[in-house]
Length: 266
Length: 255
Image (cartoon, rainbow over all chains, first blue to last red):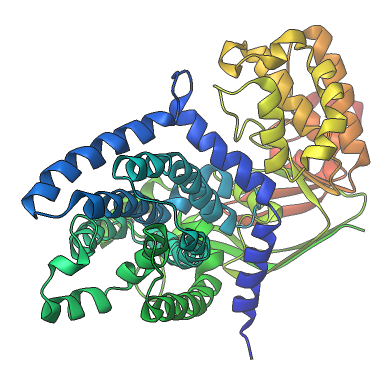
């Protein structure tokens, strides 16, 4: 038996998915607003991301004595995807807070604000992805049919990020300090996840813990591994699927319980 | 049929960053709005609305009277579905439209045309049905070629005419207003009046918060007078406005 509040939460989410045109408009508006009247627009994101990858690639690649042909594509896709993951989680914390004017004035399904934030970051990710072909050409990496699998991985990643953003959005609307905490935790996760370093540079005994018990590593892998031309491990799929199922179950209960209070907290 | 049924509806805000007894006392002293107290866990609580019980049906034109902070805006927000009562029940049946804060969601860097679609999407109007209205909106707002210019180039009057034209294409069953909208110069004012009157005419239930006796007398057939979040008086327009504003001497003579 489902609780009434959980059903209400589900219908809010279903109603939000029917408001996709609104999500689309607001998401684009967010991106455009940041870059209005600049000639290159959101491509500035791509440029700064590209410069960062090049710099880190040269410094860390030589520091860790990693072969560039392997390190650079892994670093580039890792940083770009991490940028997406961490921004969605960070901005998820303020997705309701930032939309307080709309929430307190119009009865729009609240999940719309989470979708809007996610969509905005998907658009930005799309711009950053332009870097990958350039990197691949630079290191003469060939295109592999396995790359298509990353689309499935990306869908699963987004499903996971949505429940995280939803729970954090609700919790941070009530406890404003939480978003600072989430920011610091993400910093730690960034260093624990093989983004700036290659997984194989860790000693096997350590990597078993650092990698296998790190759900973010698995979420990253289901998108990044196919981009780099190999299939993700079964374990990565299982962990990502399981976190999606459990996470959404918790999120629905949580959202159901507190959804009515959100407007009061803002 | 549109229907609004409130039963002991209460709105309570817990104020999490106001703790401690001394602060609570201070708040008590400067309280002009809702009642401030504390709940069983000792948190500071503002009771913006308390035990509202009333029901509205088709044809009701309700005026909301009350001083600033009496709970009029909170009640309007509850009617729009933004706030659900923290206790009691509020049943609202029918499509609700609001003419409160009609500039919400406007992007000053975007063109008038883009803003029309954004506003429409916020109000739940699809792009395709907005396309049918867009010529009418452009014509009504008298923007001409400015419609494809960024909003920051608009004068205040142009801005108002645009948002007014967009928001008034709705035909809600329940219409919420905070004071009568009045926009533009003399010529436009009359057309705006007519358009607004048409919208009010078409709606089944109107709830209008106002400080104007004349407006309430002319528009409403029922009045709710709120004080400190509670209904002080509810009933016939004449009786409640007289009690709230006091009887005007000249009318006494006339009577």
